[in-house]
Image (cartoon, rainbow, N blue to C red; front, side, top):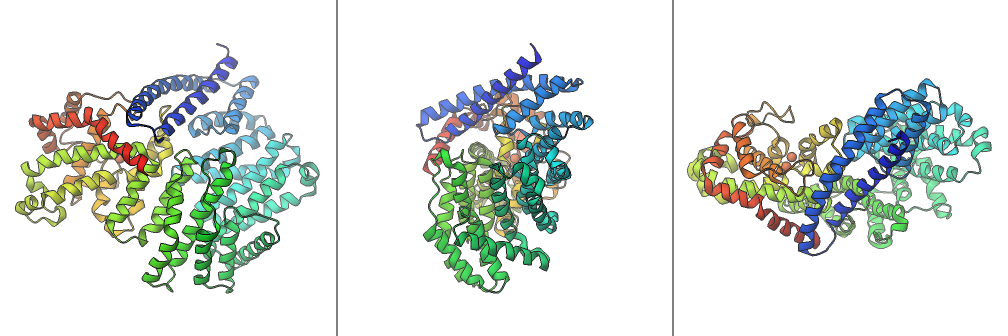
Length: 620
Ligand SMILES: [Fe+2]
Ligand SMILES: [Fe+2]
């Protein structure tokens, strides 16, 4: 096939497969009946397996093209492919960066200004999206570097022939100001430098002559004027001169709001203004808390999630609730409030913000809302009293944001419970130390509590996956090395979500250690020594349960064919003593009753478990 035709076919098939993937995933959360739902799971699994293969094959061909020396024609065609993917919103970091990097060196050699600016900008954007969605903050330095390459070319602004590409100079500044500066503390000192530099560019007579009448300019400047207000979040850490600049900008924004010259759908103006008033000594923290609570309870309308025409606007409304809620929680940490007052204030707005979170449909800006729910949990968790309350909240996050992880967790709970039910009686000595048990008698006496503890561990072990859902849901093609590295971060991400709360301490080692090998010599994270954990036996049970579910799952994992229970048992046996706890593997081999129970749980029983999950998903 001609390259041109192949690339055209590739684009179409790639997009169709992505759409199908999103579609099937979204349907899982629609409220239809039980039988349809399991049918859908099966259908999804089959289709995904197919498109996985198809996409892989096409990507391999593209990679072959890229290995060859590019002709001008090839480069133009590939450039069109990524332009198309970018403008249609098919962000796929691996695919786009593979193509873009090849093109960057090609156009750098030819000193082609237009293509370079566009590609640097595109890579800045894709890198930011990828790493901020997957919480791989370390990669953001690369994004900053790409945007800086764009703005380093600003003296050549008028030489860029395509106005869409000239716009990239402004959006590069805009993205550096927020979200990058918000996420990367080392950039914070420069935020007002970027702001005043982009103002200079805007006011430059040559820029005005060329683009003063273009509709993009007021749009992008309005966004920059809003982005800068988000410096409110870290203004306390800045130098005095910068705080002065912030106060000036925030007060100016509020004046424009009062005069009807601007709107404030995301609440950024009000939050910045409140902060500026506190910094200037004109308002007390308590007054701000009162005002922000009344914004949430009296002024804000509920987001209309079912209006596809105005999704961006509704996202603003969502974030007005979310960011105002986070802002109040931050102010409530102030020492002037007593714990009782904090609780009282919290009761006035917490439920409404949480409701806004939990009613957001899955497809609604999935990745941004995933990080928002983790952020919301972290912010409200110190205000929750019981561990039960916190755990319920967390499992609601898993259910609503990451249904596939939820199904997996339910399976792990059951498998771990079945194993513990027997192992606890055959090898009680291994449980000494768990829940404070001093001897075998106490282990037996506390058997029910221990089983309950194992179940809770199973429920929470993969909580870190909620923070990297974008990578996990991306199963229409093979994960690249970097994506696999990110997935391997989920134990540490999970720990980071709860590690400030001592009530979660009993679960720390399972969350961080369930992918380490029994002998401590393999698995991840390398830095965690599971062999020294006081709850090692619990980690070992969860690790085996985790592998049993993963290997026998034919519904949710699209990259591997489910194994039979006997095949799996052989694999566990081969790695007993190194990867898996030999005592538990022996039990699995010896106890035929347990074998058939597990065969049931992972076979027919799987559907029953999914039914239960379905009921919970629709009841949210
Ligand atoms: Fe895991
Ligand atoms: Fe897991």
